[in-house]
Image (cartoon, rainbow, N blue to C red; front, side, top):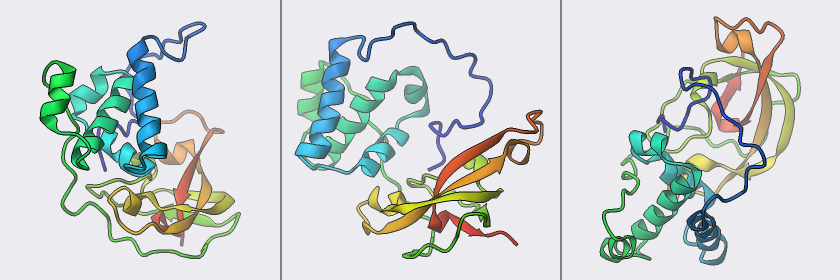
Length: 210
């Protein structure tokens, strides 16, 4: 979906401060949140990774920007547990000691009309264009490369197509490609003439460049 989480190429958020010798977890609750996320996906099999990612995308934009990584982990996981009936909102808020801000609802028609591509259509060296699509549901094609042309530099084995599996749809697999884009083609004001960006993209997101 096109939301605040898709920040690739976005400016105005300031510098990234790097903490020396940063620990994996700053607080015990962060460790618990991460363990809950792993347990619900691997042990409980409550949901898959794509559903989890989409739950985080559905967070309110202000909440997403203001919270840290592990609060996003907790929000996405708990939202799915509630949506799938493993937890009630009353029980959740009793345990949380107050109102818990959950992720927003799933879109009614979440997926773009993409034709399944069971076999690889492109080879290394092919020029391809990313489709210009904006589904209301989960998508793994970043906004900054949609509509742009790039070159296939590697074809990877088939992998689960996220747009459908994030919404309980068909668990089909498609080939993915490493597609290289010239920075100056993505951003017209780029001064980095020799720089490029490599993006992993599923076959359904691409068309042959004319």
